[in-house]
Image (tube, rainbow, N blue to C red; front, side, top):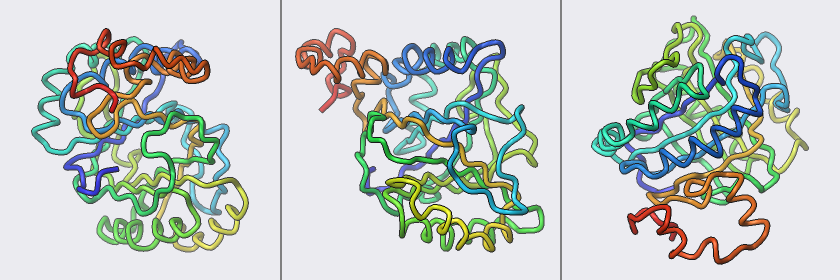
Length: 289
């Protein structure tokens, strides 16, 4: 990620449309919808996290909620970054058709803002623009503050104690101190809010080589977690895919994830020629570097 903090990072849990299977949600999100936002001006980067609570490997801490109620589960988490608030406004103005598309596959889209250096990457030895094929063990830890812990104390513990402790053993740790949900990206026909007692106040992305040492790591942090958190909901990230990185569209953002996977697997070099990319996007500044 760029050294200069982004003005705004949006962490956005998505819940599939009622009546839609998880497989259908994933196919529509990653192969249809994904090609819209990556083309619009204003975005710096977008990371798509395909998540599963059922496949989580994160150990539970006694006395702390380890999983949301079924009605609060979500199935994907895009993270979008904006270098300035003016860039956010530019994206909002341009992305009308993306917003209208939400109703086709979403029942709920929650936008948690993380402002400026409230988002920080503590360590990262992973690919900066992932295609979801690295085989690493990834989780997103969504933390809910205990009611008897004040906001400043909670945020200080996450930023100064919890996240740094995880960073000592991880390939990547990226933490977000979240504000209350706001309608930053309006998706008509979808739910875009939650009661405060069902919202999260931090999210920490943790990427490990594997499960070795994970139980001991979580056990060492358990007392602090119990003292500060009512909930640690940690879906496993089955794939993390960049559809746009540092202002440029990726192959997944250009063609959809399934097509990008096939092009990569078949080593179809002609399909990544800039002349082919210009068929799909005419703005040279957006094309892959």
